[in-house]
Image 1: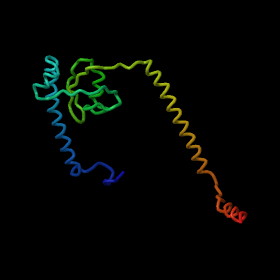
Image 2: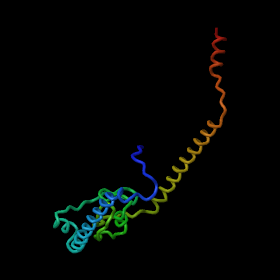
Image 3: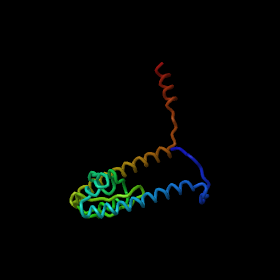
Image 4: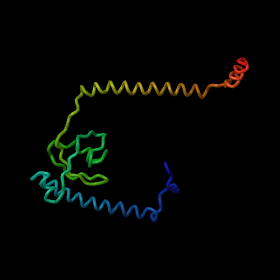
Length: 169
């Protein structure tokens, strides 16, 4: 870790954050433009298909691998509105534009693998055992560390070795 700068507490003066605000507003304006484009693409995709709507604008449809709510999805990122929409959108439907902090997405869910409760129940038991094992190991480590810290150790190895040398001679 490295400390880059120190700033006084409180609200930063406008002059200090002015450039950051300008950059953020410019990015917001670009995203607004992409939302309008995304709306047009989404409407055309409802009629002609997503690939045709993208092709007409010289864009390419990207496909992600299957993903879960908690893992990053290629091209979509992680923990954002697009990921949430992917789990809410019916299979085969094209979404309205989805604005995230980093971009605007028009998505179509091609496949969804529903979770199976039986598989989860088996995994849950295994996960519980793994977590309990890790917690137990940590408790033993903490206990031993506490013993080490609280122990009064009188190291007499040098005296014992000296006595051994004298008795050997």
